[in-house]
Image (cartoon, rainbow, N blue to C red; front, side):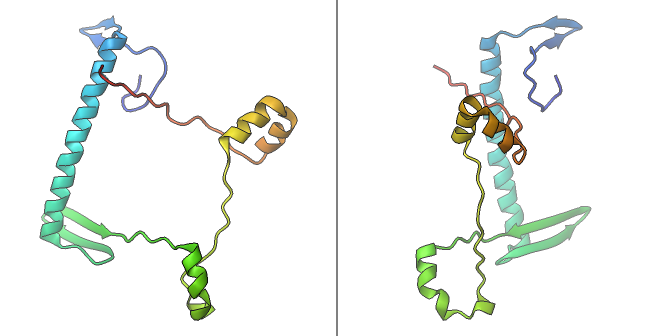
Length: 147
């Protein structure tokens, strides 16, 4: 199994040249331990990023680059914006069209439940749909809770 890649083939650990299959219980314990380590590392990383921002400063919006003794630091501050469609409709006519920073985008979204229904009940239409749709398996999810 490649490190960092999820592979659904049987997992083996090598101990001094001898293959040893881990038990499901041990893998669950290892997974919980790894998640805890990741969470601790994330907290540490965020603390360090906060300290860096205190020293470099943060732009109001956009990016700022700072050089520091062999390091190039990029500090980025983005602003997430979303529009309330109902409220926008009340003010849209008060802003000249050439100055409106809003674009209306039609979204085409695949409904998984409907795709599965077509696959199971109308294979001809499913086959036709597949000419315009790409399917690929997502990363499998594993959730382990200690009980």
